[in-house]
Image (cartoon, rainbow, N blue to C red; front, side):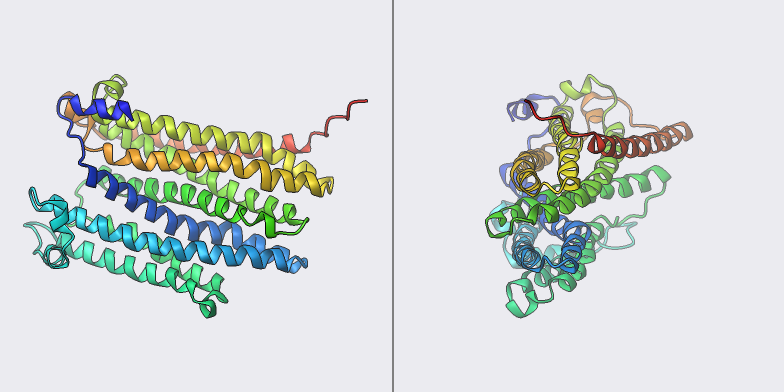
Length: 392
């Protein structure tokens, strides 16, 4: 964080105000809770619960479904509050010096949302935000409804209904008032949303599983089998997210950073470098899970070693994931500092898109896909290795 404070002294860089830091970080925290919880539940938790219920492990599944419903409901509360403060922040930024406290007034927000479209725009920016926040309120209401016991009996249906709505919150907000005129500007919009959605699914899903791991005292001795499925399923989701974040992040970095030295000579670059280091820590923790913990979980599962399986899935694994969640929250706190462009600060030319850049990007996608496939295969091979012989 000291490096980010030093960025304030970098020529051409403007340090964001405290309210801007808190509202932007809070907004992405709310998005992570909503998108990550719903996608994580749909992709990992729900299939695993349905599977164990078919095999007669209903009590454990009931405990986890109840905790999931409560988590999703609270995530809806956070999204609603964070969305309001983020909207007020937009009003303050558009108000040319308007104090943030004044921007919280409902009448000022309503005036901002009703401003006419700018010249050349096909839709007013305020209208885009009006639709976005309408979707946000509806999404929050659906999620918050899970506080009601009668609604909680239909957790699967409610979460699946909230999932596309949660994704729409960020996708609608990205609709450009002025239609992009070049292919690379379309790519900017698409890959920016890929970056946001992948990051929120990854961080929010991890937070959901950590919250669910807190129920281990109420689970049976055979819960390790259920949790082995949960970690394995979400591990696949996380790998896809890492690939998407890597591709989209490299594109966005290329657009805004003209050379490697700009990473430590510009305010934008310093903030981006801190973020990259934090994400690298997340990836390292994920690699530890994939290459060390998952193979051991798989071997314990195949050996029908219930005690070891429970210890690994509900003891060791959550501790590592807690570290990942902490790093993810740190990433959210850094995001508000990544503003402007290192190219602009350094006075270097804008990035020029070409066919060779597109070809290099396509090659990167293929190479990354092969790398992720290889990662999964290596983890599987490690799981098949025989357990070490006990010492005599």
